[in-house]
Length: 308
Image (cartoon, rainbow, N blue to C red; front, side, top):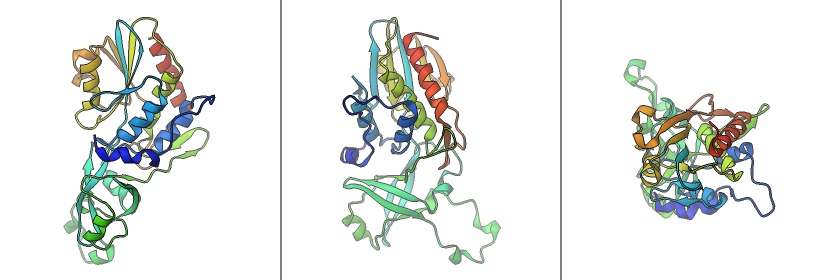
């Protein structure tokens, strides 16, 4: 978990409901979560916000947010992934540009191309810094044949302009190799109940789980361990740690997890995958239906209570 995230708590939307105010519903919480950034391995800010929001929530040793509902046996697991594929600063160039390295598995092959020309945020230790992703000028590439150009641009050709003109200025701005970089988040609600934002699917799934937990439902028998898992795109470290610390489980409900059941061990018990439907997966306009997010919250609450 990256130590710089501790400086970013004031830079994101506050999730904690004030006294005597109704907790957020799945739709509003999905919108708020979709405006936050949690690049794989750099989820601490979002995790801290969820710990503040959810009663009795704690961090485990992997950085997961864990809420235990009920007590005794049997033990069941319900989990969603917190992290999104993103980028980190890979290098500081003499001309004042940043180079990038990808972190986490991309959901779409065009992820790097979608970043070209977009506004991004660099999450440095001193706070967020805006920038724009650039590529070599097309005017300098005239005369190159289509065959000679090779494949489409990848992360190795992308650079970030933060307004600096030298590597020394980058140092002055407090930028360092390893700082996470993510596309600027601006969730858009449109139509009757649609939400478009990067990583909207996993944000909606976690909003559904958080909404179910906030309802205060407890299992009829045994306990349910609710996990908002980190590093799902990096060896599934978060959920595997949860299984090692709180398992074995008699049954598991996994929300919008990409890993197939055949890769899971016996400690997860009977595994059910439940995905919030996503349109345009992996794109900057990944879209979910907020009515479906609310229905998923109802389903998760029933599952926690003991219904199958």
